[in-house]
Image (cartoon, rainbow, N blue to C red; front, side, top):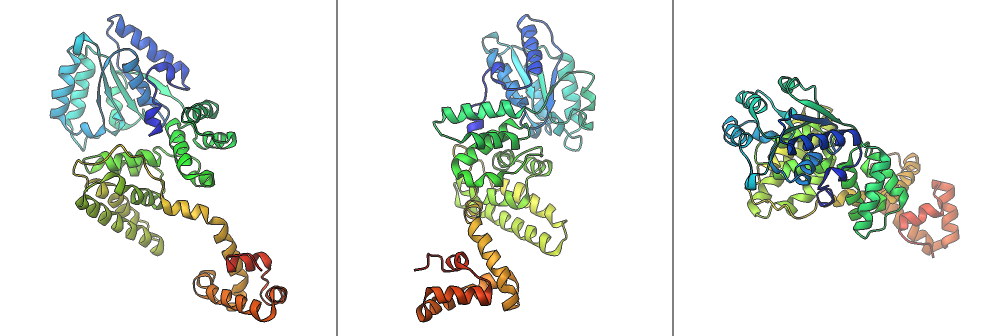
Length: 407
């Protein structure tokens, strides 16, 4: 994916948050001097570059990287076995080891009460630099860390900085993208760099007409991030929590998962299990809208996320890019035609005394046949006159119904 391909290797490659980058640079200089440093907590909105900055801090300074995330915090034995020995030793060729605990605000006592104790020991005794990342610095589950870390805030990146980055990526990819589209993507990103890059990738694959489907970003995790959790997790909670923390529309998510299951799961058994869960999710989602009982969304959410994820037996394919949902592509491409049909059906409803949906589905073929018969009997001009007088249908409407130009 483009977001991974253009991930920065040094802190100089991180866009925005320049004062915060300066503090991380000072942190690395102290490590190089052999000083014992206080752990750092990088916090801020999703997509602002927190994890990328931690990776760049490690790679740019020649540190080995030991990274753990939310799925590891439930296993105290693993934390003690991996974290504590690494925090007191040197890496290969006597390198410093940067210990990164990503998404630390997903730590929860209900998973494993021993995790907090182990992390306390790490903070108190580590001889190696430690970095935490979090979306919500004030989350109650990490309150025990606040007096033990230096906080570094990553704010939303400006649209100007994001626009320049998108232009650079498009140029590197050898693809021409209109400046207006780049500006709109940067504006809609709402400071989410990774989200803007993912939107650019979706645009490159789907076309300009889909710009309006991307929408304004005001959510903690965009659809690509949720898909990552669904298709790469091996436990029940991580994909479910990803959906719960995001504002991705459930109908949109079901479409994305539906399109990408074949690209990720190579075995028939996996495909069957994944689509079985997704079909149930779709039924609950449809039922929630039909009955206006939104408790069904909880079932749809779990089935579309954890249900699909648990179909993975470890052979998931990671190399292919996420495919844009074909049905959404079709709806965007056919929007003009559908709007025309809705307008025609609305005018015919007073004559046919039924709703627009029934007219489009049941009556439009008969209207088309009637127009074609009239053209044969009385000619094109007389037919246009009759349609305008009796049904308020004009030349453009007739063309739309026939699906071709009038001869």
